[in-house]
Image (cartoon, rainbow, N blue to C red; front, side, top):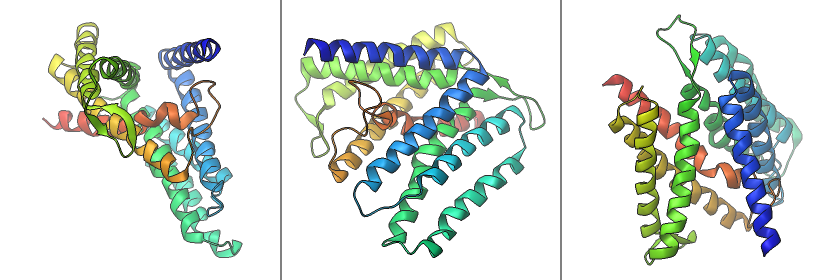
Length: 279
């Protein structure tokens, strides 16, 4: 028990240090880290769905497509309006569809479905971190890298998880979604949201490029959609009959286990910030 706790703690410290360090380190370290994370997460997703025997997802092409999509979003963030960089990605997606015509596999529809899910659920979500990271003054401007918004999504998720765990342990009585995640409680969710609001106020104090109200809104959007992301991955694991998505992070499971909240929170944050920009 003690060794497992130490393992989890050490892995958690290293994970947070690498994530924060690479995001704050600049656009190169940010790009390298999340291109690798995208590849590892899609590979892990392919492993768990192919293990069922009902799916033969084309992992190499899905991984290549996911990494390429992340790099395309990054390039488009640095040089706005360069949509032509997405053309090779479209060919990779078409290859995933057309190749099933010639492989004579048992269930091509399942293969198509899971291949597209790897792109919509995983690759697109990570790619949209670039939308948060790069800001421009106009359509022809060269954008500037700002690590604070992508980092804030992880901070809000971590604060929410910690606050929900502590509050749930102390006061949790009413199950949030017992069919999928028996340990989560409404009390824990509210507690996590309160802690995230406090974190948002701290972010507003140190990074006033958004108002306190806008920061609080971003924190709440991250909490709500991050919780749904967590539950979505739990539903997927229950359906596939597995406990952890992988074992790449000792004591913490796999990449999907660590980034499940992020996969829903990032697109929601992008939509939220886009709505703010229209007001």
